[in-house]
Length: 258
Image 1 (cartoon, rainbow, N blue to C red):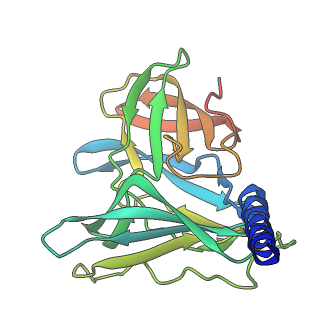
Image 2 (cartoon, rainbow, N blue to C red):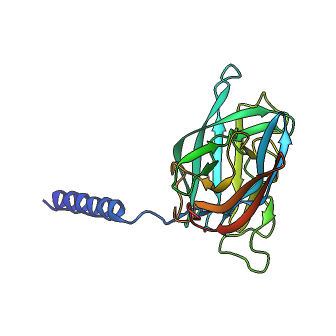
């Protein structure tokens, strides 16, 4: 009788322990917060028979955790890698989630490395909101290019840049790749780099809104999506066969800058 009671008690204790463990909250996720900077260094250039609106784009991570992306493929016959987001937790563990985006090895005049496709998009709209042109960007190599908060350090910000490996430059044979953007750091692409333009050859003179948007489909899990778009109000001028552009206003955290 005493043995049976002891077994029952042990079973109840084990059940209670399991129940307590199951009901315990999961460790807090340290999520990135991707902040799209307004378009900058905007001008029009003649290139490859086109009139191109060129610009600088930048995305900063203001979150408590890094953006971490892992890519992999089974063999070199697969042209793209599947992508996974790794999310750090407060207890130093890590969880993963698949991304719809893919990574591709891009070869161009200015690039020879693995790009995360669809990370950032550019489009030109009328003041009524109609899209008149968009980018032909082939993705981004994520990295810690500059300190976004030089006068202060964010929670979780490393003392120096971590992601400086250039996304497997010249290594098209790779089966795995790691890319990231640390808290407190930004990633920028300057004008005239591959894909940093919108073709405005056939557009009439007038006012337009240039919109930059990061993580447009919310594929990447973030702390907030409210700052994923920024824009600039432009005036496109055509005089004496020349096309120029004037920036009238920039609008952080807003997709419309009318």
